[in-house]
Length: 184
Image (cartoon, rainbow, N blue to C red; front, side):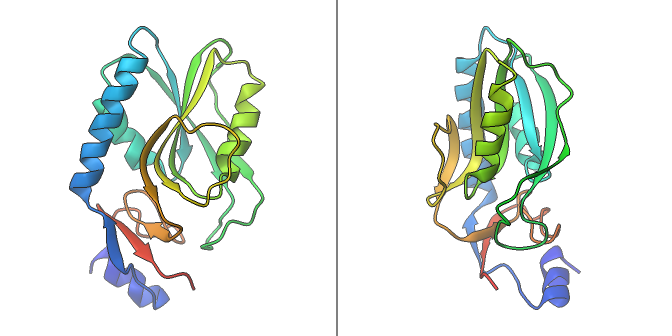
């Protein structure tokens, strides 16, 4: 049984249509990796992945970056098993790396409302990194943030999406494409 059919059986809902195909995603990640490599050529950045959703994206991205780097992770939540953010950010795992004076790139799967990246921008800025930039695979047009997202894979409409690391209730992360889903 496939992930989609198992999910449909469990929830009565299923992904509706492909928003981004695997080949589009791979091509854009190659471009992002080349751009970041150029921008950080003489630096050794610290990449901070935001779990769980970023794990596929960050793995593919770092394979496209031709430079030395460190990687750490932070785990936040604001969704639980819902399709809408609760508006409250919880830290489940904090970073272990000292980022003072370091060049930091935060890697997100999606900037949806902007709450998580806003929270991380504020939290990490006080640790005085040499630079703090953000890279995201997806950015929704409704996101409200008061700083620049430096590297954006795709701008997308306000639709709930799954696949390529993005989930609904911890399911469907393993889909190779990104699908839209109807909101319940």
